[in-house]
Figure 1 (tube, rainbow, N blue to C red):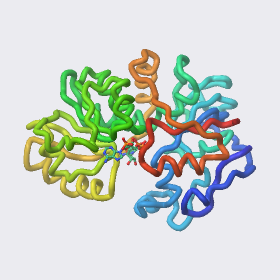
Figure 2 (cartoon, protein in one colour):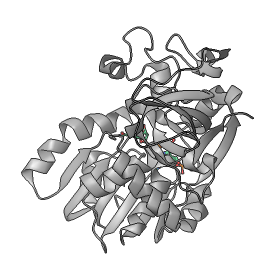
Figure 3 (cartoon, rainbow, N blue to C red):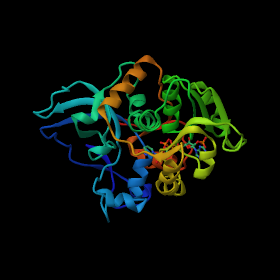
Length: 325
Ligand SMILES: NC(=O)c1ccc[n+]([C@@H]2O[C@H](COP(=O)([O-])OP(=O)(O)OC[C@H]3O[C@@H](n4cnc5c(N)ncnc54)[C@H](OP(=O)(O)O)[C@@H]3O)[C@@H](O)[C@H]2O)c1
């Protein structure tokens, strides 16, 4: 089969399109013919082996352990291992394989059945591939860590990217009033996906306009943690999914101190791939309450270009790779 592989950490230049052995499913695994896969920041972090800390998390100290990146797949089940109960050949599935070895930048991949759910029938494979990691991150950030409630004022910083476009729509599905923060060229797009208010960060600093939010989800965009604290309501919650190293440092070391010393809670999340969350999102996708926002679609041979584009940090929704084009 064709796959995009890498043997050493580095820039997208180290990625190669190669012919490799087609994987065979173990007893508890499903073999999937990948139709589409989306790119995530996790892919370029693992490509570069940066920040260095991730190499200590089992991904390979000097060389990458998983030679094929790509987590968010959508495709057909081609074969199942003998202990697989939930799927059969022909099923259309999607899922996040970051918890079981990645491997999605390829024509075929094997995955544990618990990493997968049945694909919603009303959207394409490309749209479905956009969902898993970004939408589950948004869901776990808003619902689990953020304890989102209907009627709350919720602000999403980095609203126009992969996580942010899902976060805006998921916040609305919970009945919140959503304020989206993005740059000028994305204002109309985030309004079109349901944001009640849009702040163009090139023109207005939401941390200085005197408004307060019950929940702030930060998918990107640096402000100091004290700026975010100022923008929170008295019992407000601030959740970081990602951003600069300074943001990560502040939320790890200063966040707990602020949370312990007052009524505001400030912390980060690390997404946990979860089949129940995929099923939850599938219902939102079926009902049309959540619609994936697609940016560029690349063929498999251009994964390096897809990652270069994503790394620029200004995607408009999700960047997807369509296999077989
Ligand atoms: N914690 C986890 O488990 C987890 C899981 C998934 C992702 N993440 C992290 O979450 C972050 C977002 O991921 P993503 O997939 O959404 O990335 P993405 O698709 O690359 O989104 C980038 C977005 O950030 C926006 N942005 C850039 N500078 C900004 C600024 N100064 N203020 C506000 N927005 C700004 C861009 O919008 P404009 O073009 O409008 O500037 C762009 O739409 C990344 O850091 C990623 O590593 C973490």
